[in-house]
Amino acid sequence: MSGVSGVSRAGDVGEGRDGREVLHVKGRVLVGPDEVRDELWVVGGRISYERPPGAREITTVTGWALPGLVDAHCHVGLDAHGPVDAETAERQALTDRDAGTLLIRDAGSPSDTRWIDDREDLPKIIRAGRHIARTRRYIRNYAHEIEPADLVEYVGREALRGDGWVKLVGDWIDREAGDLAACWPRAEVEAAIAEAHRLGARVTAHCFAEDSLRDLVEAGIDCIEHATGLTEETIPLFADRGVAIVPTLVNIANFPKMAAGGEAKFPNWSAHMRRLHERRYDTVRAAYDAGIEVFVGTDAGGSLPHGLVAAEVAELVKAGIPPIDALSATAWAAREWLGRPGLTEGAPADLVVYGADPRADVRVLAQPLRVVVNGGIRA
View 1 (spheres, rainbow, N blue to C red):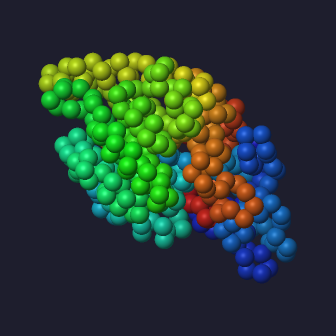
View 2: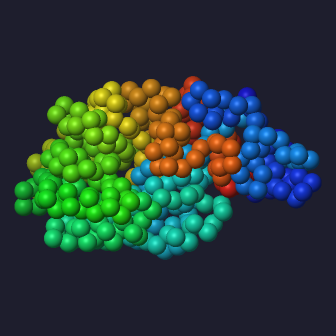
View 3: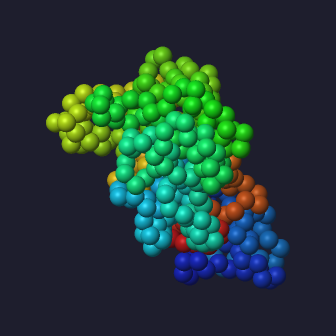
């Protein structure tokens, strides 16, 4: 079922007799993977499954409706060189929105993007504060660059600055060793994660390689970004401790290019990056098979453009994750993991409408018919 009817212009909706804004979405409303309803109503920017009394149906959208998609690793306010101005950050957020991404976990940004919270037409953002990295062990202008003795202090600071998440850089190239290496001693990372949890924040970490994973997981970390270094030894540990991963496969696709650029100076690092890339799909599938939660993240905002959420879902399917679970990793399960509602009664009306069933073919995600944010048709 497809098509859009009765839409005047973006943002317009009808009103009931009592003056409330009314939008009617009908066709197939995918409340969950197996829960489908025929229609929903949007009144005052919120979802209702009961027709408002006296409603005058002016705006109707027809198709397959999903809760607004989730990009759980995205950087609004950041580009390849560091923080960007508000105009650039706005363009990034609009690009994500128009691709159907309406909930972003901003996994580290040096920019203050709180002004976005006041915009009814932009995605909702869950911030992880600014990256925390070891001195000269990350991309310039991105992170607080500190030494282990200061880790607890900075984690506490970013736990208060963010929205319930803190982002560590768990490993990066060690120029003396010429390869990827863990950034933090075990004792310091244990204390830092404990401090974040005391303050009510979860902790995630950028990790490409193998060496840092056991210490981080045993220290109580909640999530690992990229996770290309998972092995037969650490996968069961992740599963037992309930540590999620966000693979960012659209970013991992760039490892060969990165390796080529550093091969002359760091041949061991380059060879390591190629090995991680070659086994990326097997790594993700093995994690999924072991029961590790896998979520969609694009790593947009560094060297990657925004709006890649559909491509990342397709990559998860290519890795061997069943389409319905890959879809859930950007929809129902992702929203539950982040503590945000989907298409539930009374929830903010953030939804995307497609012309075909995305459960049958996730490539449908690349062509949204309509994007609704806070009850307004924005795209």
